[in-house]
Image (cartoon, rainbow, N blue to C red):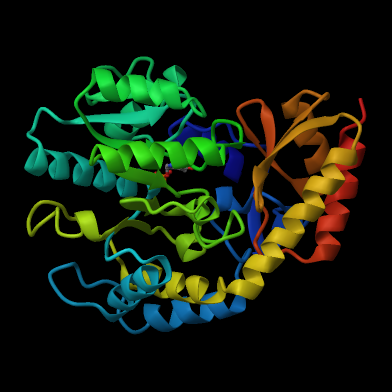
Length: 387
Ligand SMILES: *Cc1c(COP(=O)(O)O)cnc(C)c1O
């Protein structure tokens, strides 16, 4: 059997895959099993921060791999401690809990909010307010946090204690805070899976003020928006707020599984020994990869992300057949006159990988994608937009 047949036979049918087997890549270029080359603007869904098999990153990862690959959290580990230090010094957060994925990073964030509220106000203060059209993961609790009914069908009962406010509608948040005993509020600065929809600065600051007033734990889900993707180290920094908890994963380790839940001073000691854990969390190889990635997301790189973003926004807005260009940094969505599935297929045919977010096209290129490749990608996207 070939790879596609093996996959169909033995892999649980949870993914609608594109008809493509990717075998190797270098930077922003990736090759399929027939040797065809593609410019990749999907980066494994915002994971391969510096593209495929980046030499510096691979060097850091290999060096750790042949030193010590795993220790368990029963012992101290250098890459893990150094990465936590980096994250804290660059964000002002005080402590980090490491896990393996975005969903787990959010699970930890939700546990922190509930424990903080239980200690401060009593266990009946356990409701988590999230936003409609959000996405926070696939576990039964992060599905409950996800404000999209389509993900909930047939998995009920989900973890109870979630309420959903309208994004960019502060009155809707106020109303839920009045009606419920709320422990935490969780939101993405740009709703990624929801169609690349940014929140307004007014709304974000309004929610922050409400959370501060009522001593509610404000959680920012930076699983997709974080690690330079939106033109600053974390997207919340673009809004000038100070969250209580920040969760991240996807691009953090540049292609290896790693989740991080960053805790501000207010909640830094909320989870004490024995209250949370993860066997693989903070894996030294993943942390070594993340140390390399984070060290390279400096002011110069971020300025490049913002410049490339401006270029894409300005070019996309000029293309006939493309509209509703939204997003932040190198996380961009747009609608097409051509149906999204056809648009993606046309791009693929022409050697460009783009993905969907709801019914929009989503671009998540590597943060260091060369300008020449962006230019080529734009010309393919222009051609594909023609009916
Ligand atoms: C992808 C994503 C998650 C889930 O991350 P996993 O690593 O797949 O568990 C959570 N929140 C947001 C905003 C995401 O984009």
